[in-house]
Length: 448
Image (cartoon, rainbow, N blue to C red):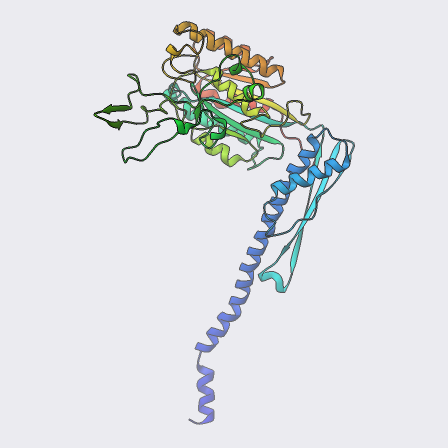
């Protein structure tokens, strides 16, 4: 082929040109994707730094120590416990200044780049947290009745919507908060502390026969517990006794026949309404947290079953907002930084129908085997729990949802911290009532 013909052939061949053009346009596309990844890492580090520094600054602001060495150690330890991205970006040691009761802390971390490294080797992220020591943070427990009657008249649906709305209000619509912590205590005639909290249960659940499912697989403890004996069921029980809670275990009997033995062979017939865990609250307690996601998930998981021991639900609301075991997320009672609140919502009155946190009525754990007297005991113990909580400075709101019993209304009114913290509601206006309560509860007030 003549040289001139070869030249014109190559000049007219578009295939190589397209490949070159694609390669040239792909370079900025790849760089843009790389920049997005690197900047995403920077955003994650900034978010994690901010959350950890806010928690550490709060820890300093809540402390009554005056030693700068002690406070700096507290700052560093709390920050280290909450910062989780050291493998991505190593932070500096946080520093702080306290002036006129305002704690100002700062920290930074350098994030190495990957695809951006050819242009920018690294990006340094710096964050600052400023908290007034006179600020009042919020610790709030929602003690929510999830008994069987909550299935009526759309009450459970309205409760979930109202609870979601209150959490959103306390968190100012954000996914997390700096000085707002919320917990949820679903209750019936017992509570579920979570089967993972086995260390706070005695005797050990393994000493009981929990039966087997239809496939022969061994079943276990559902997480519910019995109430301690009087007067500890009306006090901050663990702090008083240093003891533990007995596991909720409904033995097989004529009223709950889930285990039979014939000719040396044991047969189990365990269902959702029959078995050693029958009547156990479906949803476990959610301890105090400043993250909305687990709270919203816990609210969605609520489902109605069982009967009502309001005093048991209220006692566990207290244990959950107490700094003592089994849940230790709460601040001390005398903290000047946090105010403690409990919102108790119920749609009924105390009853004693079947097996409960106090066993069978015939067990006499309430000092009587008479049903009327047993209910009176539950009412008295509820009043005592409320009195003891209010003495410790815990502010109590109560909501009577479509309650018709005057006795129950009077009890709930008595439990509420005066003035104006007792509410009566219908299912259709429960969201409005919860909104009013949320508005009354002190919001997070961060100086900057």
